[in-house]
Length: 159
View 1 (cartoon, rainbow, N blue to C red):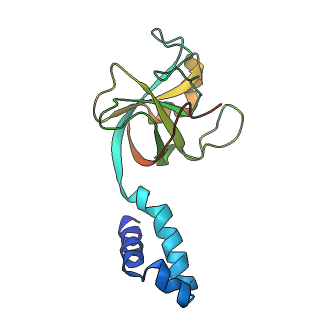
View 2: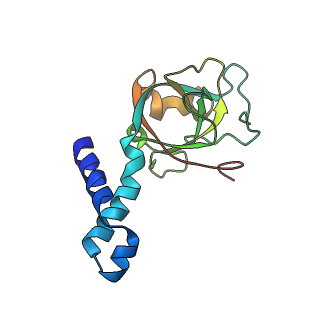
């Protein structure tokens, strides 16, 4: 999959600039440009070893290190160096997992927390209140996940 995405991205870069496209409509070029803009962030993926955390575990509270409310299946704790706070992350392995509200996870997480035990190469995923909240993510615990930084946010990421 990565070689195909990289090829599409390289092809899109070789296309004429938007000024040239304005003179000569190029729907295929436009489509490839749109795809490459969405795909480019996914080309820079990296593996992080996942651990899970929940409210009630070792002093974890209801606020993250930004002072925002922690949100089950959305808040991630990072080291702040390899992955900075305020990053929007896409974690492929979480797509389709059940969310607390019954919907399926879309794979997007918000790096709004720091963890004292989170060092380079690790990520801590917030699951909710109590140990039972970890059930749906338990198969991912201590496994290396495919993570891509796909954007940044300001303030609190959710509500």
